Length: 303
Image 1 (cartoon, rainbow, N blue to C red):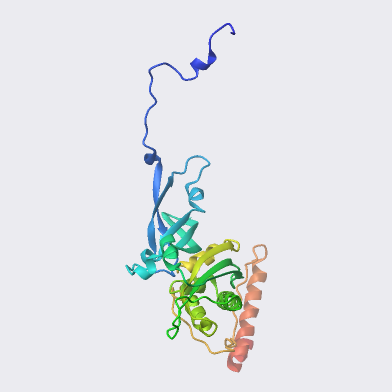
Image 2 (cartoon, one colour; image 1 turned 180 degrees about the vertical axis):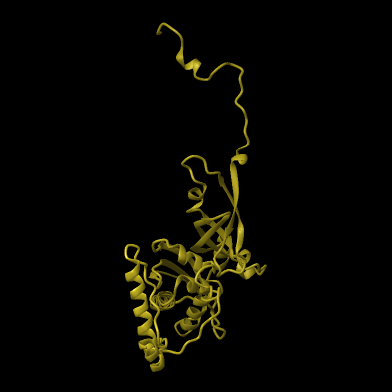
């Protein structure tokens, strides 16, 4: 053994001195989470973060957080048809005590997916990467199940492989058509009532009858560069204000030109070094203006 004191014992301090217990929540602040204006209920909930201390800023700790909220809560509805659909919102900016969120994805609950899967039928799935008009790259997953015909006496309703391929192709075509021609706001408005799945079910009826068709999941693979103006438009706080609210609106016809002025008064800077020259120049300017106004004034000025 080494001769001398054990240096490891002196690190903990004196024996019997307990560390002061401090509640960690005293160093935290609560912030309100705001959903985009596509949803009925904007107030999603609250989140907490450590206060700004030194180089650690509270708003930077909030940006990038993902909140998963049920559609029933976002629409302020107790309908069971909305409760199984979950939307993911990502915090993009902090203004005051409000955390402004944007759409980050959509998913179904596990119990809903397990309930839809049954025996004696064929499951059809499709997924495709599509880009919106405002440069959001989304991966959309669709799911559907074959349905028994009302006139069929068979116990099963299996689809052939060619029919499954045709249904999958039709799913990708409809998803591409509805997403590529829309902005992210319009895509979310289509996901809330699941209108894309209804179009798929209607168009695939000629190939094979389907049931429980729905958009199973939506992922945001890539988003454009962050712009605060676009985020404020999503929250209905920017770009919606009318111009001219501060004053009266002036209505002028197209091609309007202001009338030509008969006289123009020129404000000249006085000549400090030669005041007599400045007086003569001002007198000449007034004489030229009066002569342009009326011939009588010009004659009197000459006399």
